[in-house]
Length: 323
Image 1 (cartoon, rainbow, N blue to C red):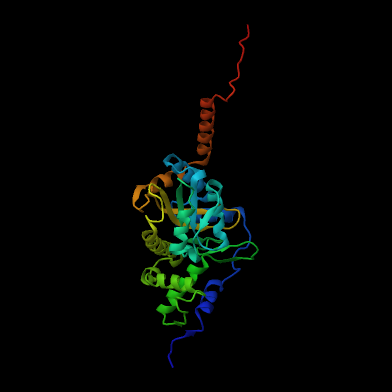
Image 2: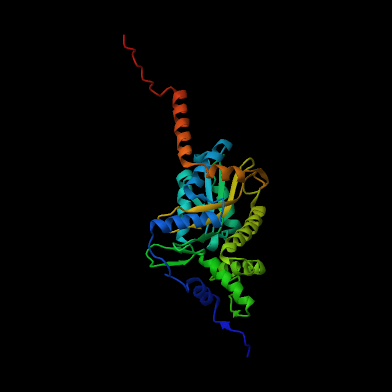
């Protein structure tokens, strides 16, 4: 018999790897833990932007470039995990309902059919904003790869899929045999795909100072490869000529309740209907997203008052000089 250990199934292995350390660590927030989470997030993922600031910044940058919020379709490829909905909620506040084509870990598993459909769902003479990326958690104790979820007495892995995929890479390197279903079987096809994608980066992951920090960056790269394949298939034939596509990719950083949700932009550009990059706006987004919020509010109020003055709808009080 082989001396190598053998797992009964990929599903069993995945569940054991993803949920072996559920409900551990600090369960409740304190002022100190909230500050610690925020500081850790900014230190480990420099350049992150709060979800609210990201949505505001997208509107500020894209509206002058012809992305009217009423005629722009928001499309997202994020993980199925409930903690990924906060960012979508912020984006929907700006652009309305979103077309979701993501699967586990945030991979665009909707494929050509979903992507082609979202192109046809775009408002007539409108534009498209696509936001995609993996996610990673930070819990109250500052642990990367875990997050405190509602109704639990501690934290749990985040992203489950990616953490399980990392465990798969480690297990294979140790000689563990895991029985995976055929990739054509939909019952676990997405996890099989993720595990295979991560295997291509086994040395990078296993040699990393903190594999849980390196993991979302690896997943992001693999998502980009898949999304590029999809766009090469669907563009330009599935979209009207002249359409502009704003493509934003990055990493969601999920945090416990009471702390902001963050996003680390890694790619932001405008594409034409053929998928060609026409403008790189990553630096502009980083600068806009990290503006002082008080200054932003002052600028917004000033802009609103200026518009009202131009429209002649601001009452200017007349003060009579005393005789």
